[in-house]
Amino acid sequence: MTDLVERIETTRFLGPEFLVWLWFKSEVFEGEWQRPDDSQIELWLDSQMVLQSNSDKNERTVLRGLAPSATPEAKLALVRGKVPLRARVCITHENQEFSLVFDAPSFSMGSLKVPALLVEAEDETFYERMRLIEHVEDLWNELYTEFLSLRLSSQWQSVMLPALEDWAVGGEGMTQRKYRSLLEYVSK
Image (cartoon, rainbow, N blue to C red; front, side):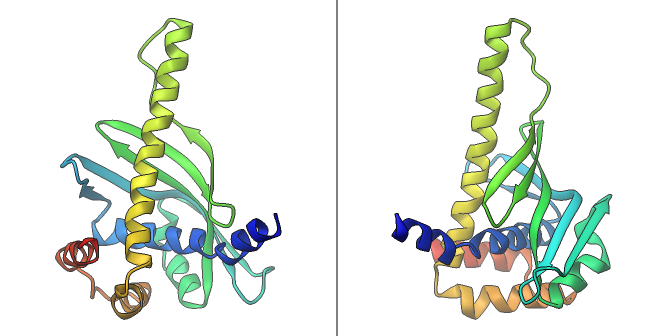
């Protein structure tokens, strides 16, 4: 049991890094990209975001409103060493819009909103809701798998970290084409 607790504590940084990567990817791709099955996915950070200093846990920046991740305050907080702890993430796939609040340190989802249900029978409604929850979970797992393939590659230190740092200060060093090439390279 002690090993499990230690393992959880030593990998807790992955949640905030994943959230930074989602934010980065959504901006590089202007919120929309193709999935491996050639379907389109849209992803954006919406309406709320909390960033916290790594050095002082009491120092937080809370942003609310339309597209808080697009504000100068959000990037400034990131540049000053704050990491995102929580954000509302919206995902659209196959004309179905999902939203959830991602808590990065615990790597948990909350406040999941699924598209309106089409069936009316009570038992069918339950199954449709479960299907939609599984669908958003599959999309989330696909995103996390992509993040991990980059994070665990040798390219993380040499390519991704400099690209993330450049992006945080307003640079545009990582293009969609460069990102796709990088992803293709680490997938080999």
